Length: 95
Image 1 (cartoon, rainbow, N blue to C red):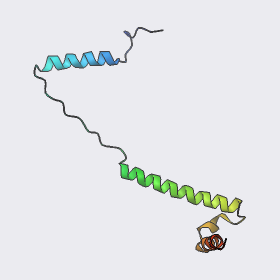
Image 2 (image 1 turned 45 degrees about the vertical axis):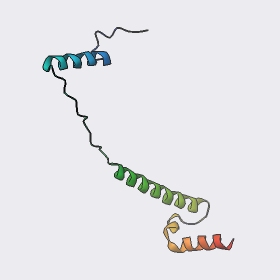
Image 3 (image 1 turned 90 degrees about the horizontal axis):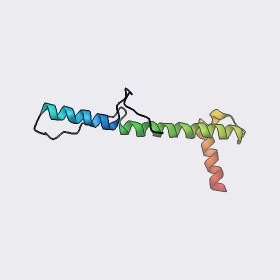
Image 4 (image 1 turned 90 degrees about the vertical axis):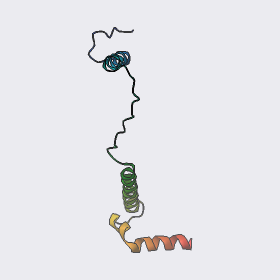
């Protein structure tokens, strides 16, 4: 089921190549080497890593709050207290 694309407005790769070659041949007889265009990233890699790190920390805190509230039987905000973590680590070390 191949359709004829002659009437479409969007150019195919072949048409784009032919069009570009026609431009190049008509403008200059000498071929100059093209320099590669570098694009800047919208979000730099370091910022992406920081975003991922922050999201992981938020997910851990929210997961600890939900787990402590549902399985531990405590209040969700107690997870953020140092006293709770001291009790949990003491429990681990004694076991």
